[in-house]
Image (tube, rainbow, N blue to C red; front, side, top):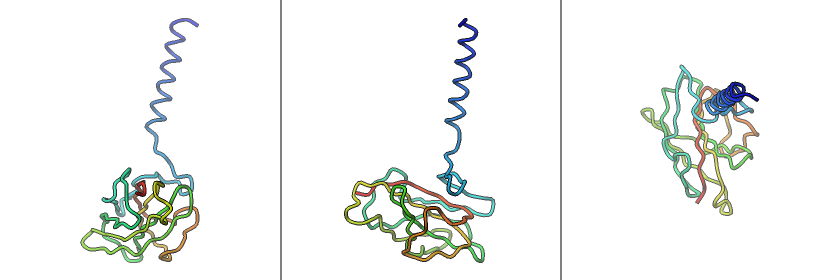
Length: 149
């Protein structure tokens, strides 16, 4: 191969690499990005814990949310690994801030990774029950990943 061909191949590889790094990670079950998904209709954010943080089994998740419209519900769900989402207690909301007491697994789950999802939906979920393998139809959400102490 001549120098021009080698340079061309190197440039193409660089373009493919950079474009792959810039793409969003997509949640195939919901066709949404796995981090913060907001819309012009509203926003929700988890402020504590932050991704990568180590948390105890019982914890209070906190965040912010834009004004909820009639028929919109806010929920916090917890998932360990690739398992089922668990709907947590109803968050309390005041002046755009919310908080929710959650449980990260059982006593034996120390060291495991958990995903926290705060979302707004028009669906009604049952507190303290499993919610299938995917999230409900959502208006907007935020997710963080933490490790259980």
